Length: 275
Image (cartoon, rainbow, N blue to C red):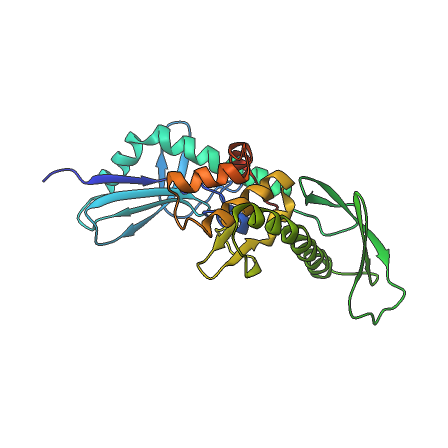
């Protein structure tokens, strides 16, 4: 019987995942080692893994927020599976460390929804400041932006959810105010008509465009620099003329935004604060 084929899938991309690492306990096995379930000794470390038996002809494994996951045919023994994992031990450890580093980076970005906390806004730091509301029955929190501070008027003892909801509502409003004129600018350059801008919170997509002229932009782009936002908008506007990623499409993007490659690379490396 020939040995089973091996498929690997690191599952490390950020927003073809803005969810993979945004949601959770994630890895950090060094800080919180699992005592239950199978482990594989890879020399430098013993790593926990989950094994799923399925109808497939190959052994597949991936490393993501949920840890090391192995999928294997029913006829392959555990010894054979662990032999494959040891053969790929260097790759597994490298990807595991990358996941741990991503978790640490995301935790460092996690917003403390309280007075004095900061979060990224247009590539800079926005500092949250509390101002106690005199009207305990006020239906909406009042917001005042005195760069670089955002003063949030909330009742005394406001909970985390009240802070978060108020600030995110403000960010979404600012996102629309920033996106609309930039969208009009690039649409005029491209000679296309944008019928509608829709704010999105899609996990896994910064923007999209359809043949009806509707463009969706993820409101969380407001965290990033204007150059990165311009790249995403120019990209989506270009799709109104070229619904593909052909050389003609990229030539159009370059015409709309010369030097787009730099903000495109910055977006690939970007980290969002977890929601």
